Figure 1 (cartoon, rainbow, N blue to C red):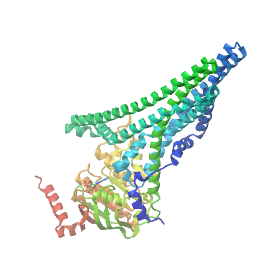
Figure 2 (cartoon, rainbow, N blue to C red; figure 1 turned 135 degrees about the vertical axis):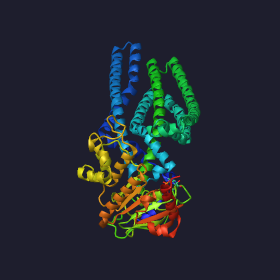
Figure 3 (cartoon, rainbow, N blue to C red; figure 1 turned 180 degrees about the vertical axis):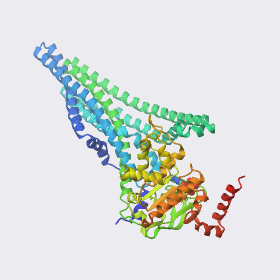
Figure 4 (cartoon, rainbow, N blue to C red; figure 1 turned 135 degrees about the horizontal axis):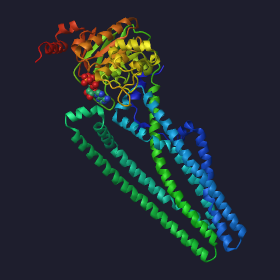
Length: 613
Ligand SMILES: Nc1ncnc2c1ncn2[C@@H]1O[C@H](COP(=O)(O)OP(=O)(O)OP(=O)(O)O)[C@@H](O)[C@H]1O
């Protein structure tokens, strides 16, 4: 069995900087294309090779034509013309066909990568990578760079084409005058300069990444329906736009500065290349004047050197695109390793039923990258079959407690025991199959009402009886009855024909979704009823409690987080959290008798209801 606590810590402490993938980068560059479309990749490789040889060697025909014409040798001229025509036709046809096929190859690989990234992001049992800004930034950049990575195989083929063409050019140049073989080497100057330029651009991109994300977020905020009402009410649209403009301007200015510096490096590289090119032409013309080289060879050499220049341009473009694909490939490798580390952490069995309950032993938790613990030394027992309410001020740590119980995070110290077995030793997905939860920020997917509810237990999502029972238990029957096509009605405003619901109606469907799973070991209700009135909330909680009591043989625990004491008082056990510590535990009557924080808060709220100000 794995060592869950150590594995859990390794997962939490996993740092991006620690990943130094090397030779495997090549696997990530070519692997997706090979897996997504092996036939297309093989075709592209063969076509590229033949086209490269054909296009690089047709200046040989010029040599035959010019020297044949000067020597009045018709056969040589005809051979030259035929050679140029044949090689040109082969090169042109294959290059044109490859362009279309390669673009289809990139599309296929891009779809493959989208699916792969999505699988990897969701293969991580916790949510640290989606909540920690530095990891989130890596995932954002991976998502944005997937098209570049998808084009990597194409870029590598481009590189392969440059290698073949350059080799052919060097061989043909050697037949004219061996020293001019060095011409393609002068091409190293623009390539090195281009590498430097791309580093300048990359450094600027990294430095501006946070600002870019902030600008995108502000833009999304200013143009999204969900935020429109609040922004207008507070009259902050103007200042939001001004803030967005200021940040976008900072990003633009930084990008322009980097682009200018990069262009200066690129210009310097090409000046070096042009100097070498001119020098070689002078040498060849002088040799022709002295009769050491034929005019046909000079024409061929100049044509080859023009081609060499094109190869240098291609090579620098390819190197630039590949460099950016390599950066994305490293991010993909990091995510693969991150997901694998997180996945391999646990293999313990999840109990079929709870006999004793869930126990937190000296649990302390600090969010990764934060020193200050959010929960400290929490010792708590959630008895099997009990309904437990957690109350506390905003920021007391209630949702964090839920994140630990649903295994989104593992405790920094201490343990959570499920019937005596460490929760960290159980695979997160297996544990979650036996839990259900309704959160305050619940999902509002644009699906049919049946799917919206059925998503709570995918294997039974198509079972109308199961969905119907969940709808009744969640108090959503009236909502469904009012829908034009009942459970088959598409919901949400994203698609034409979608039926938009009110906040409270969405909430009832979310509650129904939370009641889909049969006999869960843990049911979490994290302030899911904010859009319902106090009476409706109390009724709903009573229904959840009733459902969990009906399945008492499974011993499931129902955990409610609410600020409404009229609901909280119904719980078998009430836990008061204060700044991450358990301040009080007991049932309603016991806590009232003890006259502590709970009693004060309850009395205050009850008085507010009885004597409104
Ligand atoms: N992803 C996170 N990264 C870092 N800190 C966080 C994160 N989520 C919450 N916190 C911090 O943890 C503390 C507890 O937050 P938590 O959401 O658990 O409180 P809560 O009791 O549920 O509050 P509320 O009643 O307002 O929902 C807060 O100080 C919050 O700033």
